[in-house]
Image 1 (tube, one colour):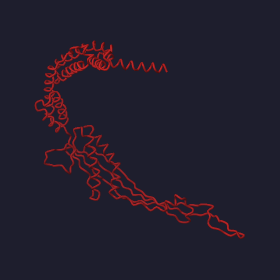
Image 2 (cartoon, helix red, strand yellow):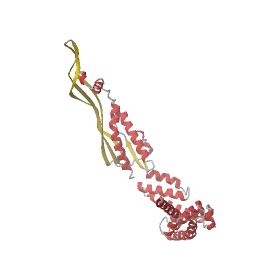
Image 3 (cartoon, helix red, strand yellow):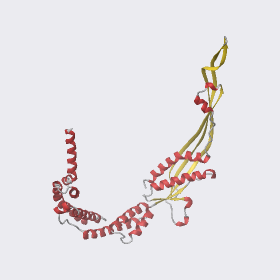
Image 4 (cartoon, rainbow, N blue to C red):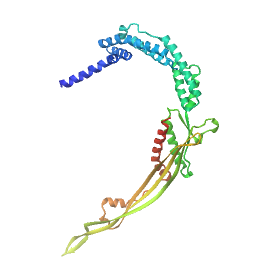
Length: 377
């Protein structure tokens, strides 16, 4: 028991030690060490270790940040001011945390802040990233438009509404969005309702899964050709082959026999006695299967109508009903067998239902494939 208590106390002491930021300080991560020490002083204002870490780590964190800022300004990269912004933000965040912790503020009464410098760095970072976004957008490719979209968003994060960045975000989003025309399966009017149900649900689920990506699906039925929108790809579904309601009947007959069954009475020497004998019957078990199945092709074409990829998915559904009849003496049957003989064949589902049932395994296969294909965009 004492040994378990000692282990528990050791774990608590190690966890407490780590929370002061001492480990981060020993590894040279002075910013994290200072942040952790302030957090510790909020919950434990009298922590000697946290006071020690903050006293040692804070000036080193400032030195690190200022050195990074100087190096970043000398850097020739087109977005070097993004690192300048990061370092000023870290310094200001550390000062904010200290101001809002009385125990830490007592140790560091006047933490250094750079609000003006941060504002100027944000302006320059917004300008740099904005210029990079313009260059990417001018490339005119889907990939670079997506890159421009991210760059314009970063520029807007530094300075909200910088120049015409809000307009350019929308433009880059449009140019960077993969537009896919979805063409549903077309079948005979008898099954079109079920085919539409299949495709509408598939399109809805795929769109929901990819809604956070720059991918937009257009339904071919409701597409306005005069809108000026030109698809990059065509996702075409078609039931290449299917059959509904193929009936298969089978019959199985077994011989039943039961011994020592009372079949009547007889008078022997003036006394009535029961007569026992063996009874037999033939039990007929009928099974009716209605099979439905088909193949769905999923084809993806590019804007030049070149086939990019094609997959076929198959599915099958078997509905069945069973019933029994017998010939002979019913006393040869068990109670369960008699019950089955009283049952009539069930009425099969409608053909629309059979269509939907055989497409269920196809749906899951097609959904997984399409989702995986477009996850790479």
